Length: 267
Image (cartoon, rainbow, N blue to C red; front, side, top):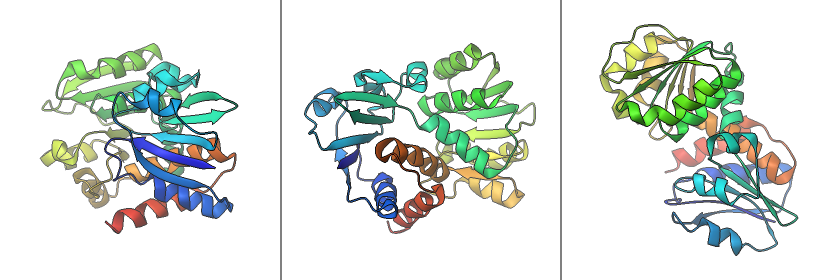
């Protein structure tokens, strides 16, 4: 059986290392490759798939196209219009988003209480997925910190549709409150010299960036002994769900985390 991760660029992906580690653990003689698929080409790509293809992990810039080509869509995909997983079964192409439940699993693994207040740096697609995750966990107040307030419109709409109180601030504005969880979806250099200020105003930090690691926020959280999650944690947990969708079997997120870190350190 064949599976793959698709996107462009794709050579940097850690998905092959994680999924191959899962197949080895499960004793499956499956293949998993990284395949370059450019924006606008997903529909023709999936139309030419052979009968031996079981599933695809989908990364940028194809996640919206993946949602569109799915004959069936999970609740997360219907809500966000973004899919990171395509499963082929009996001629039907089903679209899933494992980032949302994967992020929730990563937060649970950290052992912190579900946040009631949170701050998200950034307002793009990842921020929108994290918004849905936090809303499901019961967040009551969510603050978006962005360089351009218009960029957060989609994430704000998702939050408000779930009854979450929303505040939107510009990146250079002072922080007004301490929150249960800080989520960063922006590059480390965007945070810059404010990393300690941001960490000190948070009870836990989830920085979805993982390359290069540690980020400025990662450094600050370690120095302040604040509970910390990285993008590798998110990658591992969402990949666990992908493996289960593709193979029907579960693996440990630690197994996939270690495979991703080993691949990252080898670069």
